[in-house]
Image 1 (cartoon, helix red, strand yellow):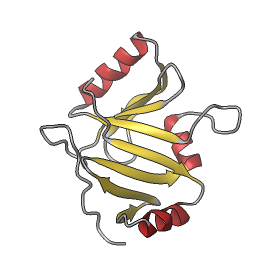
Image 2: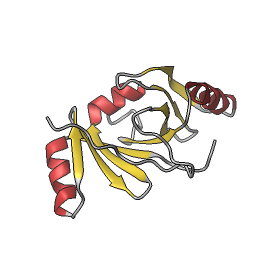
Image 3: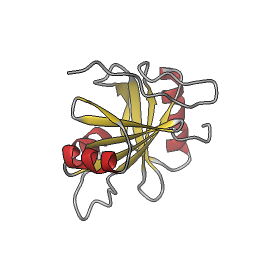
Length: 144
């Protein structure tokens, strides 16, 4: 696994409110399907409903769950890499919460939690191609 983070997704109570907050800080985001993407250097910061994020990670949310509402994503260049990294993570002690499978956005991904419960999504997303250095660029999404 290369040492990089592709996306940081924050599970928020109100996407519209959170977007307005970041935009007041001077950030510029794009919204698609109730998800806001901000380019942040070579990675993306994403705002998504906390309940949707927890469900997507196959993690129970709530005070006793330990879910922090933050997911880190490591994007890779192929479905095979997703399978390999999820298997490696499990072999070294991670808990696989969502086995690799096709995603609603046309990619392929799986999720594991590390030894302290931090969620990592390993994803192949053809809509977010990786540069040679592993960085991503948020694409221009169609309006509407």
